Length: 207
Image (cartoon, rainbow, N blue to C red; front, side):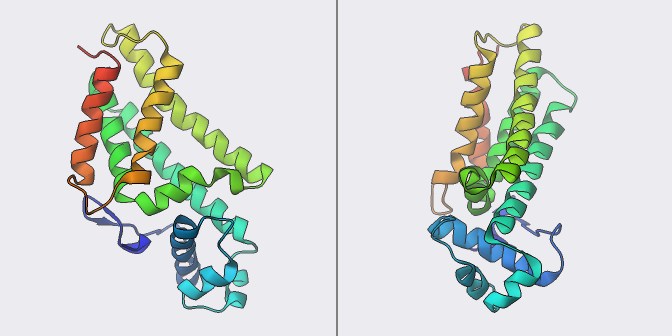
């Protein structure tokens, strides 16, 4: 399945933030190439070829291969943060908000698995400045989940001795879905989301 066709609940991945159309095509091609070959093994010629364009055309829209990866990483992390922030700020108990956060986060990592693999596992290929920007977004992602768990502990809903360690475990569990999920598997993204939400609630000792 191509990146353009990946779904979560049947919704197309539009990359609507990326314009014009040629820049979007190059970005989609880069996601597919990075996920398949890895960032370092992918050349700008590979990306341009997948987009049906010449290598020279790529440089009109992106100065370097790293700029492409940075754009992909930024958009992906912004989306991940939005998913968790929305869940964290909804009405309801900490348990309800944590279940919503986990199920939504997992659905995204399963439904957008090709994109998510690049977003989550190619961080070290970025230069220092771009990497620092993405690391800052990751800290915000961590803070959203940690905040829900802290709320649950304070309210007596969760039994957690190490909030920071538990937050890391929850995020690692969710992110890893992008590595193994396949459309040929026994569960849909929605079903995996429900399963993981239940597992995480058990992890935090929810009543």
